[in-house]
Length: 374
Image (cartoon, rainbow, N blue to C red; front, side, top):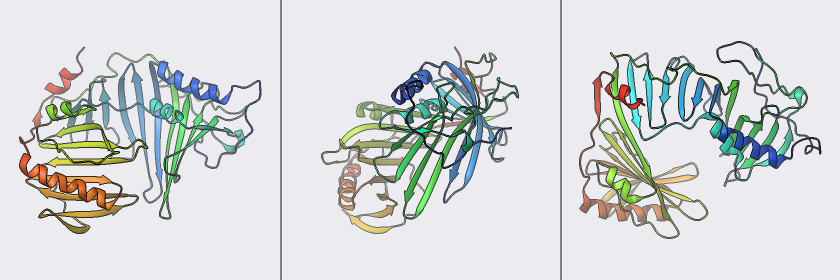
C-alpha cells in the first residue's frame, strides 16, 4: 500500500504557461466538488499536539445522502452514521443503540476541503514528487491503487485565520482537480496543534447499491430521537424551543447572527450567536436541565447571583446556574461578559425556564424506518 502524509512539503515557482493558473485551479476544484453527485473515499483524521489520535472512516456520498462507517480506533470501529439530508442516524453495534437527529446533517469531507479553498487561500506552489505525497485511488470495493504526483505533486494553497496563530494548507490533486488533503496548524501558549484530514481510495461518481444509504438498525436496538433547529430568525428559535429563550442585552456593534436549539433526550440547549462586522463573536447558551458539573473560576456576584469567570485560552467565559438551567456567556472581555450576564440574570428571573424538555428513548426502529422513506 502507498505511504501518505508528509510534512514540510517543498514549494515550487508558479505554474508556467503550459500549466493551469492558480486561481483557475482553486476555482475549478471548488466547482468540481459542487457539481459532484457521488463519490466514495477513506478519510483519515489525525490530531497531533497535546492530544494525539487518529480516526479513520469510509464515506459514501450521493445526492445529499451520506453513509459513514468508522474503521478505527477500535472503540468506534463499526459505528455507522447515515444521513438522508433531513435526519442523521448514528448506530453503535457495541451498545445496540441508535440516535436519530432531525434537522442536521454532516458536511461531507470533500465539501469541507473545498470550503477551505474559498476566501483568502493563496497559491504556494507544488509539492515535489520526492516529498512522498501520494493518494490512493481504487474502484469501490477493489484493491487497485494508483500513485499520483510522479510528474509533479499536488498544488498547495494556504490561508491564515483571523488570528495569525492559525494556518491551513490545502492540497489539490493535479490529475483529478479535487482537494484531497488539508492541515490546520494552531499555535497558542507554547502549544502547537496539527489537525490533518486526508482522503485516500477515492472513487468519483461510483454506482452504489440501492440499500447503501439505509440505516439498517436492528429491531432490537434502543432508539433515541433528537432534534436540531438552526435559524437566523430569533422568532423561529423561540417557536422551536421547549424552554424560554434568553434575551440578553448585547451592546453594539454586536448583532444577532443565528441561533440553535438542540433537543437531546430530556435535555434542551439553546445557543445564540452575536457577531461584530469584523467577525468577533459572543455566544449565549442556556441548558435545561442544569449541568451537574461543578463550577470553577473566579466568583463574581451579579445582582445576587454568583457567576464564575473563566479564562480559557484566548476566550473568556462566565457561567452560572439558576432556576434549573445552566447559562454560559462566551466572548472577549471580562466587563462585556459580566454586563451581558447581568442582563440575563435580571431577564431570566422574570421569564422563568419554560416547559421541561422532552425526548424519547425506546426499543424499536419506528423513527429510523420512517425518516428515510421516499
